[in-house]
Each structure stands twice: as C-alpha cells, then as structure tokens.
Length: 98
Image (cartoon, rainbow, N blue to C red; front, side, top):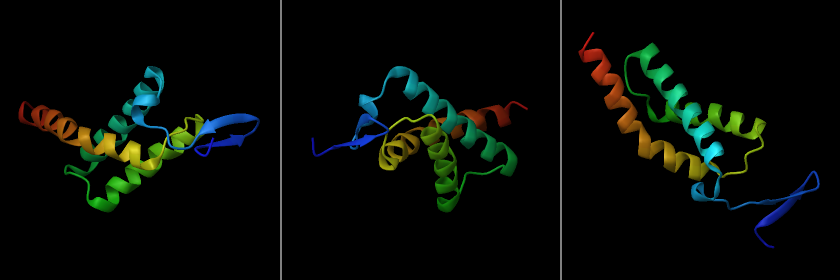
C-alpha cells in the first residue's frame, strides 16, 4: 500500500495513470482541456507559449481537484501535449473557411 493514502476516510491511489480513470472522468478532463485550449487560441489568434500551456493546465487541474478526480499533473500534461496539435489543426481549418 505504498502508493495509497487515506483522505477523508477514502483510500486513494497516488500514482494513477490516464488508463486507470473511468471513461466519464476521461471525458470530463478531455473536454475541460479542449475548451480551455480552444478558448485561448480563439482569443489570442495564436498557439500558446510554454508558460501559457502551464496556465491552461493549471486551470484544468483546479477543476480536476474540485471534482476530486485523483490523477497526477504529469499524466494530464502528457495527454494534453498529445492532443494540442489535433485541436490546433481543427481551429486552423475553421479559420481557412471563414
């Protein structure tokens, strides 16, 4: 039980991976990340800089903690980095047709 801690009477796994989350939790996190990223790109008309990516991730991590979803920052960041190219291409495609 070295990877577990007890919080408010619940036993929580501290090293949970993305694949260990329930589908509903994955959908929530994915939607939050996508919404924050798209909102940033549409308001600034450019890709975020490194520190701005961290701000986006920080906002989403706050929402994750409010929902009491237990996942590490590094797992969320790994998922986010894998998706930003796809999200930006989609937004870029919308700009071309306007």
